[in-house]
Length: 149
Image (tube, rainbow, N blue to C red):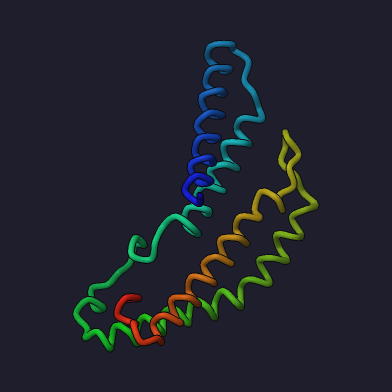
C-alpha cells in the first residue's frame, strides 16, 4: 500500500510534466498549474519514499569502521546512533511543526495551495523517522538484537 501511494505521486508528477510539454510545445499554450503540481508531487514523493519505502539497510551510510567492529560494538554504535536520531527528532519536531503551521499564511502562486499543506509531508517524514528509530532502538535492546543490525 505504501508503495502504491509513492507510485501515485510519481505518476502524478510524470503526467503533469507530459501535459506541460504537450501544452507548451504542441498547443503553444503553457499551463502554469502543471509546474506547481509536479513540484509538489516530487516533494511528496521524495519524503514519502524516504519515510516509508526505503528500508534501513537501503540507506546510504559510511560504515568503513562499523563493518570492522565486533557485533557487540556494532550494537553499541547502532543504539547510540538511533538514540541520537530520536533525540534530535524530538528536539526538532516541535519547531518544524510550528514553522509549517506558520506557512499556512502563504500560498502557491497559481493554485493557491497553502504552503502548510505543501510541506505537511515533512512532518509525516519526521514522525515516521522518529518511530522507525525508536523501533530500531527497542529491537537493538532486545534478545534478537543481531537481526536489527
